[in-house]
Image (cartoon, rainbow, N blue to C red; front, side):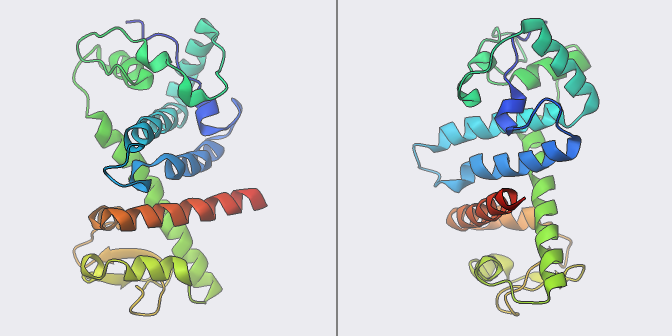
Length: 232
């Protein structure tokens, strides 16, 4: 039942161990955009390393965003009393898990919390959990952008123009859904919360974009989020 010493999830998200839930969520947005594997091409030699870091970022958010899991994690940190390496992503704590049946040798959080919750019974795939977490904040970021642009009542410029125009085929069936005055590049270079006629989510549309377009969009979001965090 021992999952080994945990990684420093606070350091991975670059927050203090007294961070609020909202601060953890905001930090997750920045870290997920920074490490997302879609920021590089599918054949990039960096993709596997980015995937590993993205998984650690998702583990960190999964652990720290829930009060009960965070309390149990903090207790484990005190129990092992391990130091944080200069680069928290270099920690090999997640690889020290014994290769027991049903365990993921690369995820301390997945092994610890799913075993505690179910006694080792099968759990939803880790990838599904990661996708759900990232799609949730992705939708949130897109809503924030759309509302901000709607309030400003001005064209969005290159950012949303790029998103609207870079995938005419994929976005051709998307229609405007007005909480934040939505439209694609062809209809005026504006975007807020997009849905297609069948209710397709923004994240589902994002996943259908060509890989290069996904990379550009994530890079734009990450650059904008970093700029805003520095201005605070």
